[in-house]
Length: 219
Image (cartoon, rainbow, N blue to C red; front, side, top):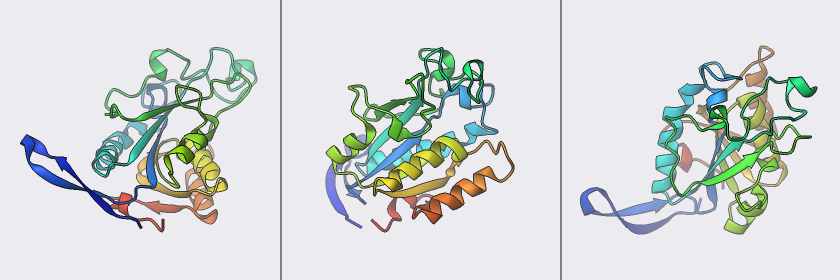
């Protein structure tokens, strides 16, 4: 693991050293949006429980000078992803709607890189790697540009967008650590969440949780 230090200012102007635990890693926060939280159109059971640990990870990532990406489903009103047009899901996360907004409790840092996905009306867009930055740069290209080769993944839902994002990251040759205390799943079929995590591990990904999880990688 690469480790560096850099000087910075702490609380009340106190000088402190910030440890960069892995300058080639980034945090990827997936789809913590109102429609996926309790009361939303496609709520993940207890999906809002991930907000506190994700906020903590984002704070730790910022302290470690680690890039944070946040993804959002950003569907058009008409898409084959929705049941009304032949897809599997009810309408959710429609562009500009309240359901597409990030949960109010999510403390997204101003420096976070926003990734929009699912805006192709003919694609499900489960994976963050189907998404793009505000200037339409594909996620993988942005990672390469920043020299990032390891992703810590948190968010919703474990058995769909987290799973597909982790799978595509591994397929692209990136290291992956899923932060298990900061993900939640749907379990449409009983055991889907466990199977998703098993699949990620079988493909070479890691599982971790807790305060030092961002420091535990093989990278």
